Length: 162
Image (tube, rainbow, N blue to C red):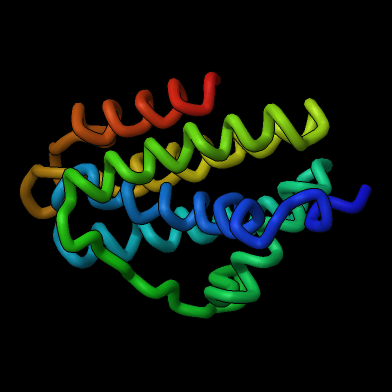
């Protein structure tokens, strides 16, 4: 199935940009130290790269494009760490873009591709928020997924109607 020609450049940009935007937002939902942030980014980029093995041609195409632009962590490339200048505005913008992507997929994508894409994007968020414990001392204690991370993930799933 041919996926990209169905979409305008702007629409394709939304679909390709959303997974990495979700990674950024999920990583920033809770303020962490640089080591934890690096673990979250590596987990997120790995989840994005894993999309290349999807049975959905849309997910495969989007994941392949993201990896070609950002590097392949599965081959040792270091993911770039990006932060929103305004954390709350950035999180809200990602949720808004997720809603727009859902509407776009509902109107243009095959139902199976739309569903696979939506679940894959939420999986990226799940991998990021679960990648590193927050809080604790010397690696002991803390929370695997904080309330702020859970809220972002749930808001994302709601926007994508999962």
